[in-house]
Every structure is written in structure tokens, then in C-alpha cells.
Length: 320
Image (cartoon, rainbow, N blue to C red; front, side, top):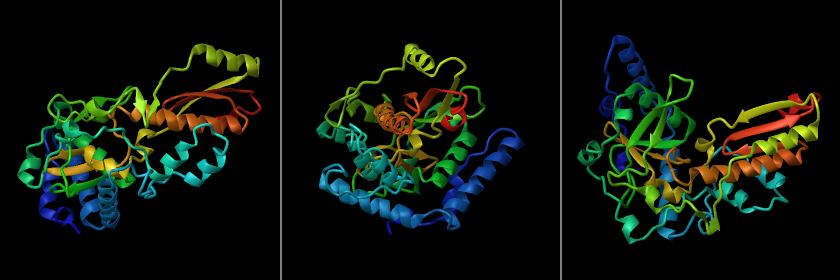
């Protein structure tokens, strides 16, 4: 196992910096303890992490996308077999392949883009990574986020130094307030002018050789559904919870979406909030979900992780 995976209880104190009043300190301390339990008391799947690092090495050295060559199956909880069954007549059959072997983020690798990589083989270098004020000034939110994402298997870490055999990119973290909530949304700034600039090398108009087009559903589309279902129909709206964070990225791209928190390195293994290609990848998947929904006899419109539908009173509960 790589040195970066060694367990060291003394380093866990770096993951939480208490500040403010006693309530904030107690809450932050609880988050730190949760991280300790996950990582240092055997509740964090180190073997899974070691496998991911090994699989990444295979894909990276192949110089091809995972679904093109190595074809290492995703470790996500998505029921790929169900999608294959329900999408047998779907126009975009490639979606099943991407669900099974993960979605490339669309990063264009060339001499300029790969010059962004840094070694980070000495922890002093990791400690020098700067995050935005929105992350630094809300440490408790950051600790909660790390606990949740580690528990759900959306990130791997913490590593003391770069766990890969090549350079990586660590982008700055930020947080923004969530609408109608006291919680904050954690963002990975992949467009930072500070030097990382992962998004600069992702084409917003093209994905895997195909043009990308994201359009909002029109009000007229919903009106047509209402007219189709008739008077007294029920309208409903649902959003796909944690949508981006359920979609696995190509294991060969993991080194591009790293971040550091208080001297430790983490990597996303699902779509990052802040990734240029995340929206259109999510749209591609929810289009397939909407297709499955329609094949079951219901009408729906979708945009990213939001779904809206109209159904008769007799079937509305089932549709919802």
C-alpha cells in the first residue's frame, strides 16, 4: 500500500481548525471525530481506495478512456443492468456504456494542459495549497461535507501526499449559501485564475465528439401536457437528489479533480460541483431517465436534475 495511505492519528488534528464560540467548537470537534472514525477506526474502506488507485494507474497508462480500452466497471451503486434493459431501444445507447465504465470529464490532454500538474510529494507543498475564503471561513461546513462525501463514497482520501505515480491538479475549494437553507454548497473552483484551470481544457460545446446543447424546457411544453391530460390533472415536480454526486467519472480522470483541506488531499470520483462538463453529462443521464419514465406510460419534461410532469388524478400518485 502506498505511503500516502498510511494511518497516522496524529495528523487527523490537521483536518479541523476550531474557531468562534463554544457551540461552533463542539460541532466542529464532532465533525473531526466523525472523520477519525471513518478513516482511523476501520470504517473507511482503505482496500477500495487502494483498488481505485491501482485501476487509475492502468487507465492512465493506457492513454485511452476507460470505456474504450481497460473497461474497468464502476464501483457506483447505479443499477446498470436495469438501464441496459430499459434503454434497449433508446437512441443514445452509449449512455449504458458510460454508466458501466464511467463518464470521462472531457479534459483535453496536451502539452499545455498537462503542464498544470504538480508533484505534491512533500506535505509542505500540500500545506501551501490555498482555498477561497468561502471555504476557509466555514470550516464546520467543510468538515460535514467531507464526512458525508467519504461516507457515500463520492471522494477518496485523505492522503498526506500525492498517492499517484504522476502529477496531479489540486483546485481551490469554495462554498456558497444554498437557497432557503442554512447549509452551504461546496464548490470546487476548476476555473480558478490562480493556476489550476481544469475547465479551460474542457470543451463546453462538444463531448466525446458530439455537439452539446442544453436548453431549458419551455412553459409551452408543460401547457401541452396539461392539455393532453385534461381538466383536473395534477402537476408535480421532483428533483433527483444528489444528482451530480451519483454520476461516476472515468477513473483515469481522478487526478484532475483533487483538492486539499488542512494539509490533506482528497479526490472526487463523481462529478464535481464546478466542473464545466458536469451539467451536460447530468442532462445526458436524466434524458435517459426521462425516456424510461415515458416508456412506463407517463409524461414528463426534464432539465438537469429537475423533473416536471402532469397526470390524471387516478394515476398522479403513482406517477409522482
